[in-house]
Length: 356
Image (cartoon, rainbow, N blue to C red; front, side, top):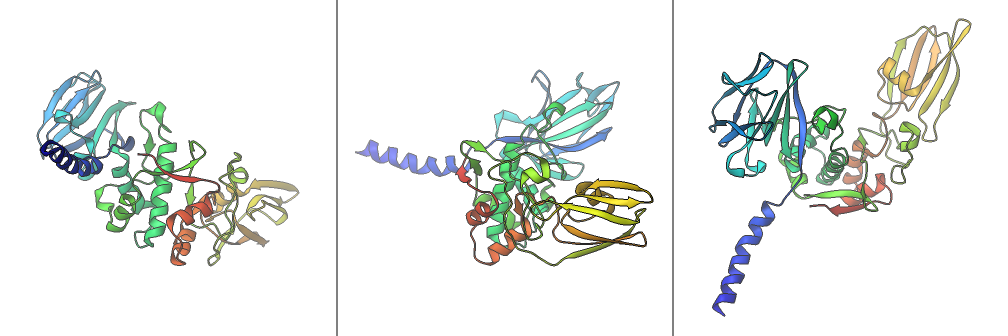
């Protein structure tokens, strides 16, 4: 009986610790590119390794290291690594969740991969995905938004990261830190509300059948989201057009070389597919995306008039319009919708599963 009680006591101690330190995938995120040197320090004792994973140089906690290029090789505090790529990791095989790295005075979770690419240094942050999300969420959605909207954004951002892991694989990293992937910033961007949303949805991911979905999001749908087919050409069951909240319109005026508008073609969600303009004796056809880029418009959901070569655009929404509208998610949360209801409104026939 004593042995059984001792075993129960041991399990009671170990289970919470195991859950707290639950496994999660790592991501490689490019944070710095095209520099000749960087300064680095870590929160715990760490080690630089070279490509064959042999230890190259130890780094004490809170000790500055200067990484630079000399004669086509990487030097650390003046010592030649004899390599074009080095890795900064924890000592004694500790988890990356225990490590913080300061790069150019900015603090990131986890370690680094540093490589010479075309004569310059590229710095890639290697971070556990839940720590990565802490630098994404407040950069992609205002921390002032309701917690249910933030939870929906956390799951969408996690799903996007997992689905697109390896997007830049040929360049040696998974994701970049810009809007091309997801905006990712250092520890100074963290917020209590977004941290809460991430923690309370730990590991939760969007699936269609047994496959992780693409989970795009944008600022404002303009009252109706777009299907993936009409914007990008790929037709996905879970990325169809749905009715949404409409907010105030925007207006943009701009000079042009066009004399008049011949015809406007729109998609089923009300976005501009293409417009044919008259320019002297010629007809010029531009796609909605080309017009949006040329005149710096928030979206392709607009009407336009041409008078005296002045184009007047009046439209709705902001962004590509596919997937989750962030402002729509905020409004739905304000109306009492929970994060799962919000996600299932924007992504059809999906399931939310705890992946890890």
